[in-house]
Length: 494
Figure 1: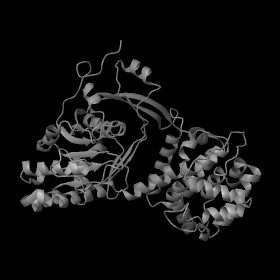
Figure 2: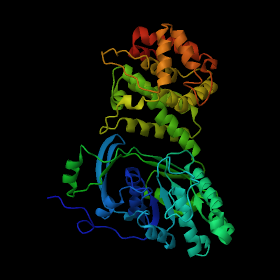
Figure 3: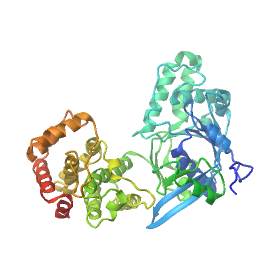
Figure 4: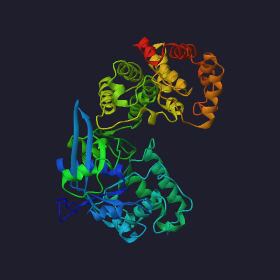
């Protein structure tokens, strides 16, 4: 018999509220709150999380309805073994809606134990809105709410240096902390008159005694497991309607703030002592490049190569005797050679990526990765192609073949197994590729794509025909795919 899930039916830890979390969605609950739950269990961190709903409509009522208890279902491969675990997370103390509970929200600023602010308000959340007023209850933007909270804290504790906060945004923006800090300063200037005589002191207190970190987060979180929920509820014995499913891999890179050392931040946030993949570093940038290059880069080229070879799922591509070798070549022999981190670190990360691609619980369709393939290639693979050429004096064949596969995919038609090829993208890209393929001249196709600075290569604005040898190699691969098929062309470069 399944029970309701709440603190009457399940044990719940009581710990000091040390973290304010803006956001109550699947990602934060399966990533950040899971990490804090582990820290509480394995270190002396001893802290709970108060969740704040960043927009007017959200899930805090659902959370409070279960006394903020829920299960995380981790699935994937770890050291070659399949893992499918269920853990009950009890680290959230309560959840607030600042639009209906603004007094309770602002009172968080007065709690002496609060030390961290963590957020994931989507990419659109870290934004400066001129229309926000200091007197709004609350301000509509996330940084606006944060400044209101920080000012209340400054006043409550008379600018005490020890009562500043450590801000760790998790929004998927490169250098998210830098953007957040900039927005906070913009609001302090916008509300200068409202702050009055406190303006200079508050600005100095924020600058010196609050610590803003840029972070990189990495965990795939599919979310609520609709197809598995009945079996999961049966297994745990509770009617948990907030189960969140995630892959077992996790990585959180936290760039130390300018005004705090790595050791100071580690001692305050001891995730490494809990055996977690939480890395506090001088700079997030090399890890951002590593993720984009070794996770997103191979995804972008393996998808069209696999699809045109008759393979539909990423896991099946990894395990295919030919395409599996192609993925390994692109990752370990080409893209890895373009990065600047220690080689053993890169090999470990690349191996972890392959385990993630090979997740037995996720049927990741290659076609779902192929939307916007050209812009993805431009940001994820083109930089590596250029660096490889510069360092090795030759072009990386696997990446160039991946580009040829993208171009062939946009031709449409049917695969060798008779399945229809139905590309979907921006109309201007679709129109250009249709026009180029209609010429029947493969060189015109290659030159037209590589030279399409206004339609395809909008970011770099570079005519890629100028990269030595690229046009000829691309023409060769396009011709081979037309004559021999994708699989035989792949074999020729292995």
